[in-house]
Length: 544
Image (cartoon, rainbow, N blue to C red; front, side):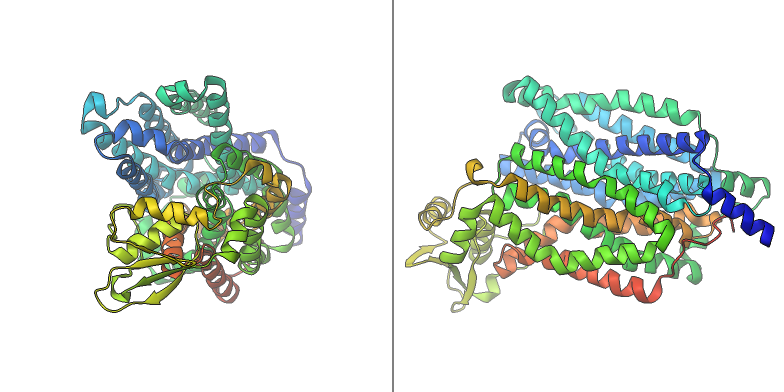
């Protein structure tokens, strides 16, 4: 026992070997490219809508494009099941080679795909199929990369080693934004809109070739190789992981006590922050993207820092601290972003209250899970229009069957009037609500500091979670066991965050009320994680 402990301490104290650096670099690089592939679709959604759904009005086309984007999130858990099973049966290395190849091919062919004008209905159908392939591939990639790196890491360094994997989602978003901004500025808006938007997709072919070449030189995980040699690999990993209560309970607690909270903090601090800047505060898109890129650049080292720290003090306290900080400070941070990025909107929200007078029976909770749901009553029309204009409002009940009205100061608009769609923006503007943020009034330094703080929360909850999930499950079902709760948490709890936030804002009439969704989920994970999930930093992950 003493000799084993001394040997373990020796491993903990030594530096990283060349083979371990290669493992981390190759696994992380491939995963960066997979996230890059995944995000350029969302970032270039308006161009995809124009070329692949040109047979319908622009607003409907964009909804269909978002529906295809959401489909990629929805199928991620199924990818986790398919590839998690393969990873536990045939090996970590070969499985994430398959997932990476599928992702790269799917992205590359989106760049080549003819539009609706050339292929007709086949163009959007093939686009959605390629998007589904992307989602399935991403569902299998993360679990493989995290498991592979963790099983190569020496005891006492799994948090640090896997933290490099945790940088990949943010770096993939960073790479996508940076490349799109660079190509867009170099080509000009005209050429980029005509054909230049395809370049980021086509470059995926180069990234794929480099990643496959590097990963082919890797050896199989030593833990899996040992299990294979000893005949201890699982023949039915999905049944073992999810049909046996002892393992299924861990997966359920990992979902509710860890990945759900991590997902809403991750999406809230990066994706929703960008959405809030551009859609709610009406900050010009390029300006918002640049500020997000700067915040990501400043915050990304936090992944490595907190991954390293989790090896010292544990995974659990760092992740739970991130949940708590996000829950306590999201409201003041987002209100601060409004103050610094669009002060005129802040002033208008305080000085020009708006009231929607409507029959309560006509007012829906406008949750657009797929983007195609229809909410067409006069109450829903009024509230959705006000949300899109970033206007807070109060609700007042009207007699049953009465068409909705919008009262702005002393002015009242009838929602059923033919000119309502034009009259509402004009009335809102007349009462001090700006059509967009004034670039000259944006305090970019202060805004970036607040965005950076949101990224720090992301690094707190995300940096140690790969090591935590790996350590929760035995080796024989590790790939399957960790992948499903991770991708349900991130694909569903995180992926549906924008739709949920919009529905809450439309229902309550306050542009900040949607933040209750990430706050409540983070608090749920804080409580469940604290009470029911164990600390794992010192467990032996070689056990089967």
